[in-house]
Length: 373
Figure 1 (spheres, helix red, strand yellow):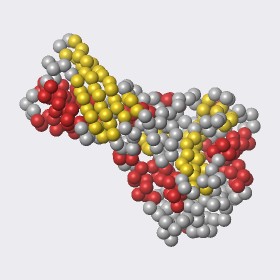
Figure 2 (cartoon, helix red, strand yellow):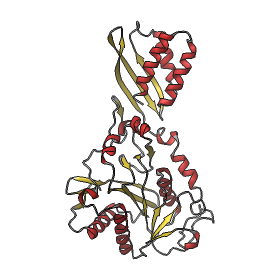
Figure 3 (tube, rainbow, N blue to C red):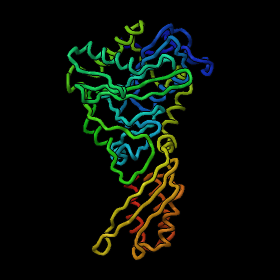
Figure 4 (cartoon, one colour):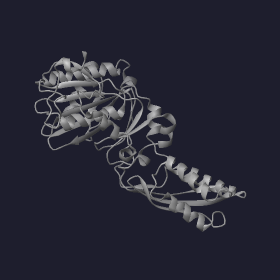
């Protein structure tokens, strides 16, 4: 059963002293099942962090359901240039988010269910959570061949991944979250989670590719709504709590004091890109010059998302050393992103306003470099 979650419901939660009195109160005596009414990835990730940081989960576990509009979510220690097709995402308006948990990169859309299991650190048990999901699925479709792996994934028919896992473990609280593919756009998923960028060298955590499949491809009755209700029922039975899914609004400051600032932080360039572990790009491309192709070599070091070292090598007769040095030094300190490269091109144009040939070469170089960002 779905019911709105508000102060009047008396399903307010116990929080520690860091939370103002306007927040949740100590009226919940056991566990709780929540579902977000938002499809915004940043708002829903903020709910996870808020519950982890502020709720007292002792004897009061929480299950949180959430779904997002098209988004790619990378792990805390990952490199987006290594994990996904950023250019395609920009073209399609697909959001990029960096979560606070580890693990690999995942694609979210409204055909994917996200589940977050909150417990105390002592009661944190990923396998137990996955077994609960498997039991719920088999309660709906007993013939379904779904099993949890040692990597804490869920496999369908022994080979197709339908769920991946990540977690965050704090001093006293912990959460385990996982995806569950019901009717996700598989074509979009595979194209977005394939990096086209060549020459990226990084020590960041790399995702492990896998064959995936939707539950609805196996059984058309396994819609997101059916699966959510089945898991909620199994969770309620397992934890001996009321089988109610409480709807929450992640922007409600009366329930989650300070949450909007958390969501805002998760959207910043400094968090999404700036938290990328140091990496380098060592690549080359060809440009057409007098009916032949010239090789341009590019080496860039990036730290905290900003260019620390830039070395563009081109034949002297095509681009004089003095101009190359100006271009290299211009990139230092700038964000490794297409917008700042476009701005740099405009600035360089103003240094030689009458040289159309030079402008053409700069534009060509910067467009090529933007293609690797």
